[in-house]
Length: 312
DNA sequence: CGTCTTTGACCCGCGC
DNA sequence: GCGCGGGTCAAAGACG
Image: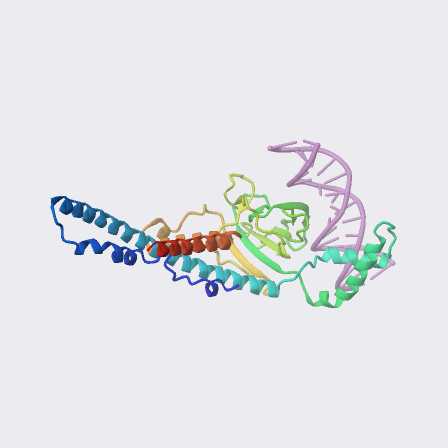
């Protein structure tokens, strides 16, 4: 859904209050005071008018800022939508290798289970239809390199999802153990994660994600948790990467606390404002109720304008 | 008591 | 067929 195509982001939420104010408020100027009481009243009205103009100027400026924010948010929303479309095009549904293995083995064994017999047979028919497709579709695999303290022996990478460790192995090519995690946030989520220290740099944890989450991101991510165990994914990019070309790779440096950059510390700088705008936009666009709330706000403004227009 | 982690056993694919 | 290695299972213990 192209959000900006549906919504004119240039709309003035306050409907240019200065104009409507001037049209109505300039009328008293033309009046000629007939006596001192009338003169005094006009002075008070002028003062009031000045204050109102000042406030309206302030509101207009605020309005302009909000409109700009809205434009940025809509751009971000469209960008996110495009990314979502792209990833959904290139992703797979559920192609867990072990499940496939089990399904195949159950097909070979036949229906030995009397209870699950009918469903098994129906699923085997589905599988036979799916087989050619499954050969072409591979689970979406992405990798993330996380820089941690070398002394940190835990293989926990906190990325906002809830993981359950179900195994650990020492592989041949790497003396460091490899930990296996399943997403436990949603029972049916097929996503698995492998975490192992890089053989080249023991301070780097390599997390390999298989599949895609079929549920929203954890509403209470552990990004800010005070737990001392594990490391938390941050947003500081790191250039170290030497992984398979087929996999998406993100490398993060988490050895340092995640402070704002120097430019971000200067609150008045355009970079910091841009950062703020991006943060706000991303936060808002992640909210599933954002669209409806925005639409309600805008329609509310329209209704307000209409009622004001009717009054005049 | 429910959930999570640990860890040895087991399963399965693959190369020889 | 056999052994190896990666991946998974599941029982037991830890923990809140």
